[in-house]
Image 1 (cartoon, rainbow, N blue to C red):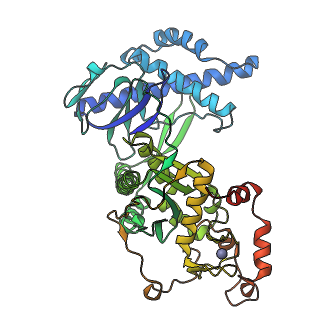
Image 2: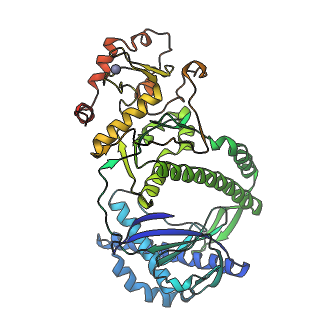
Image 3: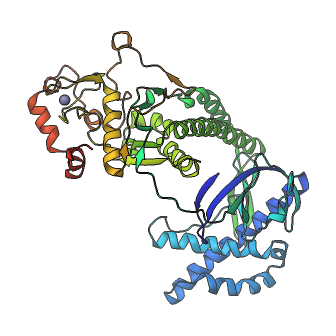
Length: 475
Ligand SMILES: [Zn+2]
């Protein structure tokens, strides 16, 4: 389920339901998708040739006006709902808008089987039955309505996934909600440090282990990938309209089947991960009314090849967007605040001293004020403090801050009983000193860690914005 603001100011939500079409309906769906794909490619070709001839772009309106002519020339398109065809032209228009606004590459033609969804732009609540949905030109299709639809139905998109599952994505718009002023005091604030060993470390000292779900699913996915790579691509020769003979590679039936199996295994992994993330996000939002978290530069971090897989599996940005969603729809007001990730680990949360901290160092020891704490605890406290400063709210720390104990948490071990962590890049993400460090731990550079020179060097890099936020007097 997704959420955003609608044209009438109301909240727009998208519900996704699984469809189980009969054999005949499935065939028909595929035919309609193919017709949509042809129109898409035709519209794209029209735009390209018009630009070549005149140097101007075709608009959506101009293309829509040529649609009746196209339909009279291609009578099979009368099978498709007229508004679905208009939506195809809208999609072509959108790809060009995205291209001109530099969000996407130049639009390309869609290959056979590569057009996988169609949208009815003017749907209605009457379409939705108890266990079915009525789709124009298709009839009633069985639908598992696993949750009630709240709001006025606006559009319906029928979607075919790579694993050959059918879904209906139904967008609804609710009446604009009364905007209440955001509270100025947070009673249950929390700062969250993200990492690869501890998925989350909260400033109330609770932690959530990284489930590393890819490890669970990897074997099945690798096996399916191997099946696929062994399957044949057969050669097929055909004659084109110009009379030329052309040979293309066509996947065998078994190859298509293997491809579907691989896609469904990836789907299983995605489902498991999303389910885990949604539950954790719900738990976090239920227990806290102010959540500060790091805005990690995931794109930069992915450049490190040894970490990329683990970072992709952790999917922090998708987790935080789920938290944002839960916070926006929560019954009680919940505020989320992103903070810049620089120096959250290196800074002492008591006195503000900044020093370089080696990854092997699991305890933060401040040479300036003597403060000692778990490294992640120090970081999450910094994140909370910075988040409070940036959002401008006040906190009532100590007023009934509850324990955070979702299913995946474990109590923090005492320093002495904690297992020794190896100094590995995997230990912590987002630490720029760590990802850059290439020298072995016993080299001369390491001995400078924590020294006054290193501290001074670290301090020079602090951006003035963050420093101002930290140096502001505490309320
Ligand atoms: Zn200190």
